[in-house]
Image (spheres, one colour):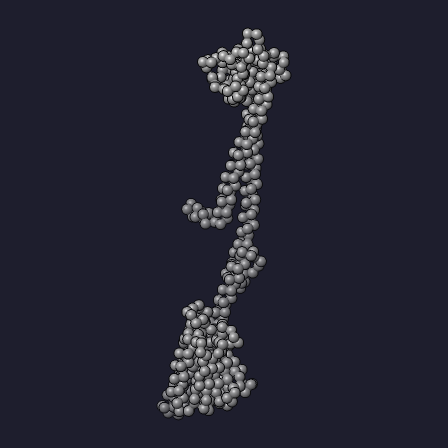
Length: 471
């Protein structure tokens, strides 16, 4: 029971329908009361207006004899209901004394027969008309209009003229109108409820399509949400598809990393396996050197793939910011010590305005360290590092690393970026330096290019995303 209540309380369809139907019900009920009241008031006013005409007619036919007594010729009145007993239309003349007492029914219409209208004493100004509702003959409700008049020359005597009419016809008309109005409003509520249901069903239909699309993705029948969605839902679909696409890329990279790592470790393991199966003619020192070299190669591959995995997880995180100048200065000091015996001069040219890399410091050190180490290995005497904004854009900057070595031919530049490729086996290394830089830069949205240098050797152009100066 509670679960059902919780389900309905959390249902968007139920909420929309409940709010709509509640609003419609309140509006219809208020409209019913207002319309019924307006109709009742309109009928009442029309009835009063018609009865006032009858009062004016009776007043016009009122005359006084020589003794000052009122006289009304019944035949002079136009409406035949005055003469029919209990017809529902009555007139009466009451004598009103100055002390507030009076005599009721001094004159009355034949329609009253042997009864008279009993009204309370009412203080009326001459000519003023008052309206009352009283019980008439046989307990029938009546609407009464009264007016006072005075006879000429008889200041002490005033007469109250009363005209009354049966209210049952107006009450029946009002009740009939109320019934028809109520039935009409009930039909209107049903139609509005059906319209609300159709509106909610049509409005929520895209959510059902979205649910089916999600089921297709979950059941591997589709890789992304497909279909046409309303403008309010389409941004959500686009963002969800972007997340799915990125997850697919991450999964594909993870599979590729695993395959590449397995392939990279296969070679040193094969070398070691072959060495163990060869005749025991290798001395201990040679065997140790072989094992050490292959372990270093395997460790380098593992470190590289671990670095790629770490960058894949953090490359697009917001708020990353690393200053370029401290990283370059530290790497130059290290390279001067590592390659001190080669007599290589490392020149650095950085812009006056500080540059910031939109990424982690370790990744920037990995990329620039590989480029400087590679340049120092091949350089004869000079290595130059320069950094500048890319084409005036504040979103990227370029690092140029050049050497005066033998350089690389155009056909070998693409090959040099492949993993594990060594163009000269006489130079120590694993062939992973440029490939590491290329992969790391790509994961940050940058790129790596190889060009001939004005120094005579190779120029490496590294494009990286820039971060703002303020954190």
